[in-house]
Image 1 (tube, chains in turn yellow, cyan):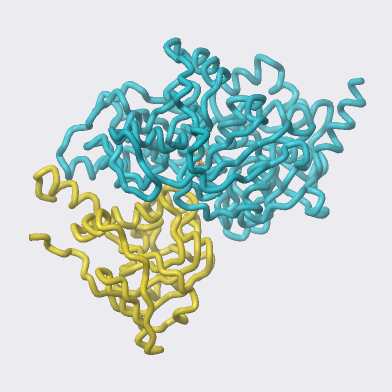
Image 2 (image 1 turned 45 degrees about the vertical axis):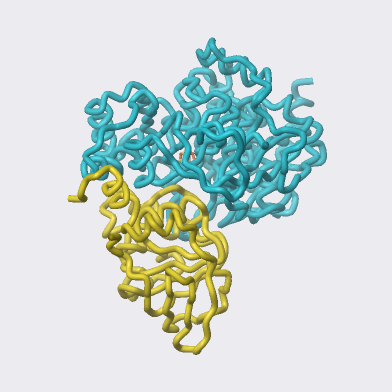
Length: 172
Length: 426
Ligand code: SF4
């Protein structure tokens, strides 16, 4: 039986961003040498100085096109994961960021509705069905379904636990 | 099939693939650097407890934190060396140059290869007719133990280059033009460069084209090999290289769209902060003062790039208000620049030579900007804060344009200087 380490229902406040949120914003180069926990405290600070200190576990990021563009640095997705972001919804993702997010067990859904919510609205995302509800506004919309292949990796909790399973080893 | 589809099909062991399908490919080569490589994959490999699938297919390059500037970067480099020794990695380039450039110099990439690199500019490998994609550290750990990587077969967007470049223009200008024209979100597409203008382009220029497929948001960039590719491979020690006409896009293949660029009509372009998409002809920038001019990176500091800069700087002086920094893309680049006098020309004009490596490109090495400072760079990206303080400003231009701007003290059109130079030497 597959143990779902990623809850299929994600509920939290939303932080809204625009297009082309790049990896230098998500994981600033100046903190790349240090521990990821420290880098995470500077995630998005160049455009949203209070993001890292105010985001709560389960909160949701909603953005436009080109989310995660730029470097292959995995810390961009990892910083969001460490801050407890439950899900990233974006009109479009840069492909390496998208792969990194799934590999780290951070749900990322293509959701082309940048005006669906305002900062602070309460959202609920059903990963399995793709339904996104705005509980504050009482509206809902559907995200593009994630390929089955990737849903399995995400359900395993990311690529490492997925591979551990495949290689017949338990993650320590 | 398109060239990209042919390589994917071969690597997946399939006769045919179609765009949109997810397939699992056998990886022919995996490249990692000091920043995203050993220090990030080590604990993952230990967790998995599985051996590396094939050490001969792995190339490790220390280029991001070189030379060490503090104890942290020294530790990263030390860790990388230790890891390479522990795992018996034969292909290790320690401070020899930027990963994408030393891969080419070492003859590691050949037509039809399916390669993965732990760096977003891995599409550079497409210049050799390989399909090379960038991946993150966790995925690299997966490749290291399985030798496999899944891909969604991309649509092919073809850029047809016609004619030849005018004096003072370079392929960097082609890319800056494309960043504004087709945008940065060409996700999941393979960007194939082709057309009648391709035959004249040097391998270094083809590498720059494929390198900045990353800025266009493509899955990768790719160019069909020709006689020039094979000759360059032989020079890089691949005596076995032969031109196989199979590695091209078939005439009946489904190409999603063609973008035509008339090279002869192109003018020098500059991308304003903080995105390569903010690119306009240099003549539209106005008199923008600069504090620093930076010639560096895999994109803009190969020997051919340094020669472009030297052609503008010959007999000229860098403005007093500007520092012109040059970080050659590899040790071999520096040696070539010494041998043909390029370096002497640059230094005589007042340029400052920095060590080989990624340097200030990613804000890790020497040449960082202070708050409010303005730089024009031959690098690939100018995202906010990438080269230093979050309120610094980076403009992108070709090596010609960076050199011209260094002389003027403000962003300048290199064609004015090349005109003066050719008159002076006439
Ligand atoms: S030179 Fe710049 S773009 Fe090239 S690999 Fe290094 S950091 Fe990346």
